[in-house]
Structures are given as structure tokens and as C-alpha cells.
Image (cartoon, rainbow, N blue to C red):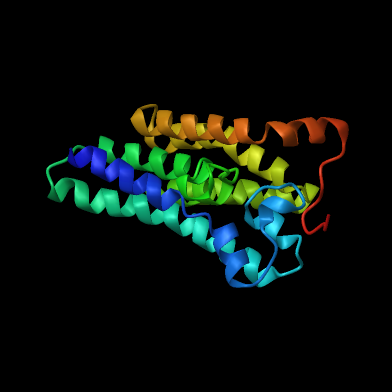
Length: 200
């Protein structure tokens, strides 16, 4: 029962879409109604409001990190296994992808995945962040940077912690993230993917 409660709370926290929340608070258009239609920091940036994009990025990443860290602190105190942390990591990520508060129309999960990875292992999160930054610096394409970081994340997890439950959890998150970018893969293949900061 406690495990289900942990997972449910993690999912509900993940369902808080900061792109929508921040946009409403700052009087901006719903990010699901323009550009890529994705409620994420990159699409919010297309409004030209860098502060709104930064708050979206911070909020989405923070919720992933907070859930994982909180689960890691509370689980041993309640006599729960370490597996609850991994379940909560998946739940908060899935909550972002399919938020119950926003008709299950969620983001692609890049920022939340970063927060989750930082919570699981700071070096893992930093390695993925560095991959994103380097790829973005070279190509200026957010989706390509996210895909590069996602593909490499299970490898980083295995190198840092060995092949086990954590690495398998990271693999599941990576596969879900790649799946959510399927439309971007098509645009990348046709050379039509928008670059960072481009308004639509």
C-alpha cells in the first residue's frame, strides 16, 4: 500500500506541467497551441520570453530530482526497498509525459529526465547534461541534443553503476524519451527540424 502511495504521488507531481503553469501565470499562449505543440521549455522559448522558458526548465527538472531524492530519503526510514526509488523515478517521468491534470497531453520529458538522472546519480545527470550542451552547441537543435543524451544515458549508467536495476530503469526512460521524439526524428531526417530559439 505504501509503495502504491509513493508511486501515485510521484505520478501526480510529474503531472505538473510547468510549461503550461508558467505560461498561464505570465499571460503567455498555451504552449500546446503553437510551434511544435509540445509543452516544454524549448517551445516556450519561441514566445521570446527567456525567463518563462528558464522557469519551465527549472520546474520540470526540479520535480524529477525532488521525487527521486525524497523517495531515496524516505524509503529506508519506512523500511521500503531501494526499488521504490526506481519506481518513483519512472512514475514522475511518465506523469510528465501523460499528465492527468492536462488531459494527458504532456511534454517530451527532457528536463524531467535530467532531474531524475541527477537524483539517481549526480555524475550520470551531469554526463547527460554535458552531452546535451555539446550537441546543442554544435548543431543548435534541441531534439537532436536530447536524443544524443538519451541514447548515451544507459551507457553512462552502466559505466558508473554497472548493469543492474538502475541502468535498466535509465534504459526505459531513454526509450520513452526517444519514442516521444518520433516526430522530431522524421523532421531531422528531412532537414526540417527547427533550431533553438526559432519562433514559429
